[in-house]
Amino acid sequence: MANRASGASRGAPAAWLRSGAAAARSSSCDAAAAGSGSRAAAAPALRVEGLAYRYARQEVWSDVSFALEAGSVAFLTGPNGAGKSTLLRCVAGWDAPAAGAVELAGRPFRPERLDQRRTVSFVPDVPAFYDDLTAGEHLDFVLKANRLPAGDARAAGLVEALGLAGHRGQCPSAYSRGMRQKLALVLALAVRPRLLLLDEPYGPLDPDASRVLSGLLDEARAEGAAILASCHHDVPGLEPDLLLHLEDGRLAVVTGAGGAAVGCRSRGAATASAGVMVAAAEGERPGPSPASGRG
Figure 1 (cartoon, rainbow, N blue to C red):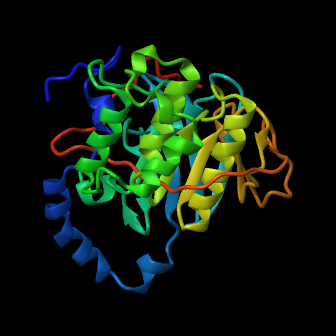
Figure 2 (figure 1 turned 180 degrees about the vertical axis):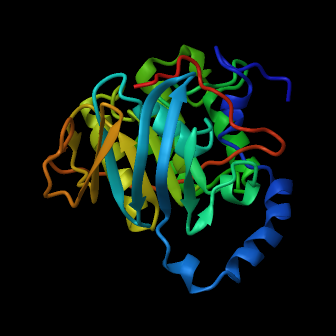
């Protein structure tokens, strides 16, 4: 496809996709994984062990370790520049850490493996879109690439819930920042990932949309998705199972929502409905998003 991505490498929009051919080729890998026994079945959805990242000789963070179970939500907090976005990109396979390991369901994460990459959805802080596709065409493209029907009821429900039903015919370049964020979330949630990574998902959203998003994420959690979201502000109506705070190059882990959150917390009640997922197109590694922050 000869489409040009808005202000980003062409790899960024492609990171929302998984081709049918790639899915077919990955079936043998899935079968092999099924034989790995109870160890993988009992493993957390995500395990990060001893992760470190550096710019040249400057250490950003090191010895980052935590685990996230299926059907759980973790909030990642920390000051600007702490490296939250970089950590999310490393977990998503978009950046390579200097040390450490990432496991998905008990298996080492290899971003080049399509059977693993298709299970991870990552919405960066500034999502990228194709210049010459409307919002509706973006959604149709993602659904077709993931072998989902064009009239998928879940996808239609997401569009309706996030208030984009009357704007499907517009290009994302004509959207406000909040509307672009909603579209990125629709594309991510439409395909039901096992692991959902969100970089400041609430930042561009108004209060009503934030409550809707919390409802969608709570439903995704109930369906078994593991969710890791960075945040600076109060999160309406979504209780985390794990609190992570990144500061001065180290990660503090608090288990359970009863711990002392630093930077964001759950607030109020939420309403909404829908589900999730995202992965990479055949032959394309995930690329950088435009103006992706390092905070």
